[in-house]
Image (cartoon, rainbow, N blue to C red; front, side, top):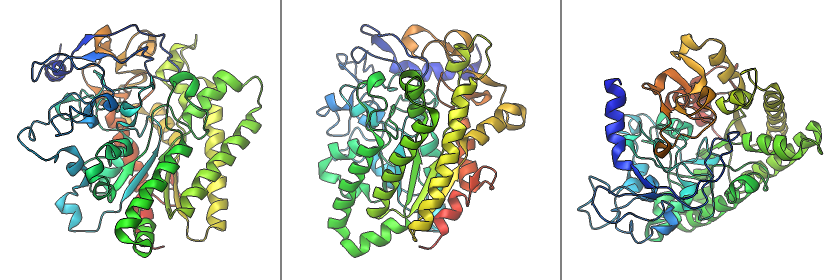
Length: 446
């Protein structure tokens, strides 16, 4: 075992699983673990009794003084905050902007919507969801090797985008801020993350598989609440100016495609499905615009047929073309919709990232980007590490260097792949993001 992996595993030991209850069947098409009930973790830092369940909603009392942060699965004392009487932990860190960035420009507020590609802990607060990632080996390359609820070995795409705009990571989850009522209004001025693993554009997406998710429609409703609170602080005139400069980042759609393929493909044509998806997405964007959003940075669906889970379920080991076709169709529909809306809504500006083209570009020429494996997952079990989850308790395969892999688990990209995607979205050319990239979008005057 290499020294790099040994060090990461030693760091991850503080997140060891002491007990896992009955495990429900795993659905490898999505890349989440279905838990019949939340797993139990040991808090071996304070050597107390195991804390039952990592769901943040069950740990309100434990992290009230910021000894335990729900952002980190409600499991880990904030090492530099244990002596503080007032909560000053990760929420404050979310608000800080690196000094070198602040000297150059004012960082826009960032509001994030979507699914597990952007979720930074939302689902930790959902008592009934089975779409969770706040257990190891998730987060093994995150600071202090904390499984935060991100479906990644480290930062995800939402984090990486925020970092490029000068923040230390993604804004905190809406449900975390709501749990901190005393500082809710102050801590949402830099942005909020509403993304929920398993969610989709359609309200029903994810509910059969994951029991509870925050749909895109509900995320927009949550933003409406945030807007109302900001308005109380600033007033209606000021908030219009703030929101017009803010970036609204959206990464959603893959779960809709999976649900269609699994449940509706025999009764609903592809065109009818795309019509339904486009209609719903139109309504979400229009509602956000009516609430003050003006700058939309949107990422379309990646080639989900090439995920390790899909290769593992394909006897040829190749990508599933039927899923990739749906991903390409959704990108085309999104592009047409955004053009039409931008014509109708005079102040609307947008950037559309082509995640399909970005990912296929890497798959076709992996060495040019520093990858050695673009088919299998860094962490998992079975063929392509795509048949079983990345759960430490079950002793999965774990690669020694995540940077060599495109995929972290059987569904999600590694932190390095997310970083490359964010860099492309932020500064890439029209092949991958158009009509402008995210950095250009931020500079547009509305």
